[in-house]
Length: 111
Image (cartoon, rainbow, N blue to C red; front, side, top):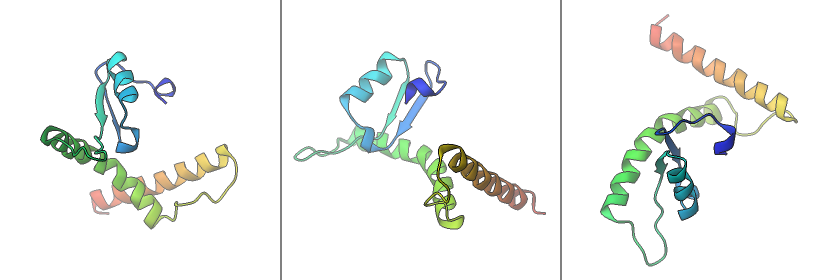
C-alpha cells in the first residue's frame, strides 16, 4: 500500500492492530516513516504499559478518521456499494463524502 500513496520521510502511518507485525514495523523503519500501527496482545503475552500508552495515543488520532467512516456507513447507508465497478463505487463514495462535508460545513457556519 505504501507504494500507492505519496508519503515523505518522517510522516506517520496509522493502522489498526490487524497490521501489527514485525515485518510491517520494519518496512516503516526502513522507509523512514513513523510507526503508528497499534500494538496487539498475543496469547500468553499481555501488552506492556508503554504499548498501552502508545495504543491510546494512536487511537486518539485514528478516532477522528474512523468517526467519518462510521457516519458514512450509519447515516448515509454506505455500508455496501450500490454499484458494480471501481469507477462507479469510487464516484458513489466521493458523492457521499461531499454530502458529508457540505452538511458539516453548514452545521459549522450555522446557516
